[in-house]
Image 1 (cartoon, rainbow, N blue to C red):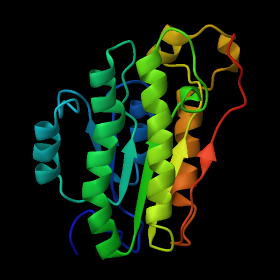
Image 2 (cartoon, rainbow, N blue to C red; image 1 turned 90 degrees about the vertical axis):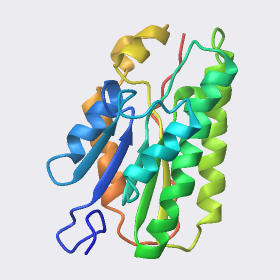
Image 3 (cartoon, helix red, strand yellow; image 1 turned 60 degrees about the horizontal axis):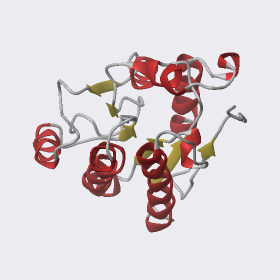
Image 4 (tube, helix red, strand yellow; image 1 turned 135 degrees about the vertical axis):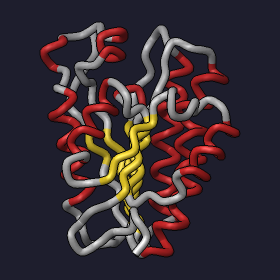
Length: 207
């Protein structure tokens, strides 16, 4: 059986973008003991360029679980769109085909409080995170009734990016590994192979 296809012992190929630091690194860490994890940092693939994404999926054609965690803020709209929206779309579009063919798949998009609210100071980030939420909902409808589950998770986390944008109570931010474990649990424990979208948020108000 091809490496990466879901096996009876549960071993799977997991691709985590933004996996070299912050929340992405924590998510990769919690999956890594039992699964084959590919951490996609900028040194592996610069997600801002489509041709690099094409090269990446050619090198890593199989994924049982795709976690789109890479994100950038405080940049112009074109750059934010390329990493925060286009990259998750291009990767999802590629890997979902194999997931359907093999009868199992999970795509998890890591959103943000900015997926649901607009905040002063970073319009491109808020815009693209809203778009990621919309894309996740649309993909969930597109693959309703199939073996592929689409999930989106968001929480203000104690990461470098979280500290950059923090203007509320830091104590209310969630620890990266707590959030990572939540992502792992909601990804792996639902084995119904039916349509589902879970939008996980932490109740938090900025300011």
